[in-house]
Length: 147
Image 1: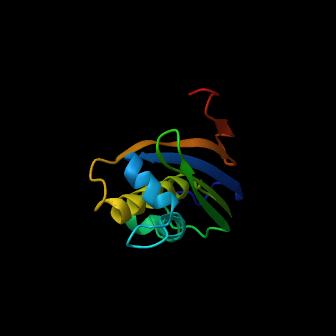
Image 2 (image 1 turned 90 degrees about the vertical axis):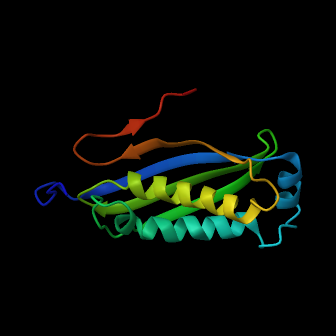
């Protein structure tokens, strides 16, 4: 791991997003909360939250840090059709929280896949990406609009 002991302690934030595209039938069942495994959106949000808290156990060279906040929002998107997930992470520390936000989104989307795969095995995870980060020695970063 990179030695971060000499880095300043600052407020770090990160926002990530991603989506999963599914069939119209699968989308309808998720929207109607008629999936056999339960409430897909609620379970995926909880899974993403748990994953963010365990990121350092999953990513070998990722620093362990104390998250002060993680919010995972899973919403239906009829235009896909599918589900969009956004995660916001916040901590006060010496290293960023990008990996925690990205892990939250990824695991939330994988949870949707797991819960819906009996209906649609052809689902596709799309555009898992960092939208913005703040804090740290490299300064703030935001993805360009329309990117």
